[in-house]
Amino acid sequence: SARNRGMDVATGGLVAFLDADDTFDRRAFEIVSDVHERTGAEVIRYGCNLVSDHAEDVVLPGQPGSVEIKVDGGQESPLRQCATGGSSVISARLAGLVSWPALSHCEDPLFVLRCLKAARKAVRIEGNLFNYLQRRDSAVHAVTLSIVAATCRYLVMAYDECAALPGFFRSRTDTCAHLASFLRGPLANCGRDVAPADRVAA
Image (cartoon, rainbow, N blue to C red; front, side):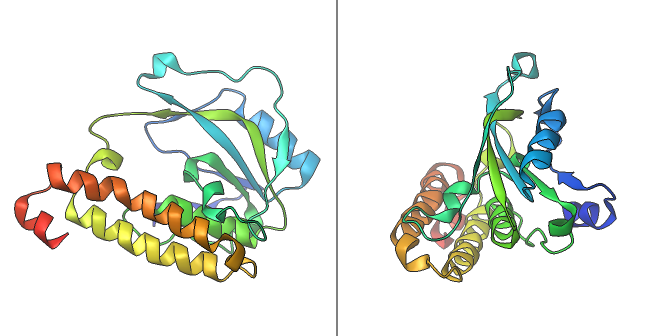
């Protein structure tokens, strides 16, 4: 809801996302703006560096290239293009059309997929433009029954979003495999980290 509110009041031509404990590459916006001007892309994706301490932040050297993203027609699941929301910059037009889903967990891939489906053009920068802090006590590493349930809600919503693509029959097998692997981690951790009553319910 906070990110949706932010998109509602944003006045710039592009909107970027970053979690509070992560950092952008110092040239991130310069690089993104250049790619946007050259390609006219409404979604610009990029990678991240995994760091355990921001003293280790990696700076991207040089000027990276970019490649166009297609989300329909191939055998690979479109969800494989939809990692963290922090890896995206979107146009103001898309910010007015697409909203973050009302999920407490796994909302990033679904939002990115919606953006890619609605975009006139999308590209991926061949470089890492933000530093993703890895913390053992972060929400993404906690496993509770509510997180498993939220993950299941995401799986259903993501499958439905993919199924609406005209070429879904070609990527259906990979989409199912991808979604199954997405759930495997939380379910496995349920056995170790969740209270017995919640484990039975899960």
